[in-house]
Amino acid sequence: TPTLVINAHLAPSSFVSGTSLQNPWGGAGSVLVAPATQGYDITFSSVPQYGCEALGKQNMGDLLSVTINGTALTPNTGTPPDPANVDGACTSGTNTLVWNIN
Image 1 (spheres, rainbow, N blue to C red):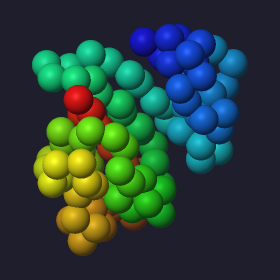
Image 2: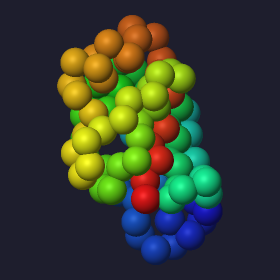
Image 3: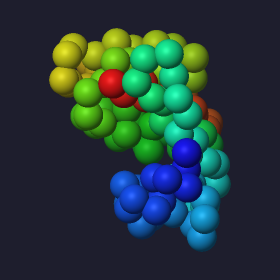
Image 4: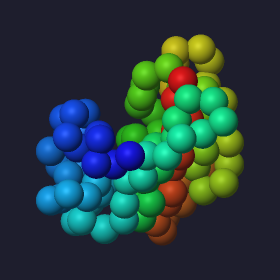
């Protein structure tokens, strides 16, 4: 749960607001940690385009998939998705990213 992530100090301080997780862009949006069929999901919503492009290219651990605005991008084992695919999935408005991590 988000509470467990905060209490275990697993989130950077810029992602924590009191007892809630958030994304670091002006407090807008949220970060949700939820169990998934395999591993767990981390969801960032209301992410601006520059943040979407930067975060979508990060190696977030043992990635099973990254979904940007409903488009599933499957990385190679242990690597982030192809940068060109990330840029194509991010929009000029706000974006939602979901990482499924094993």
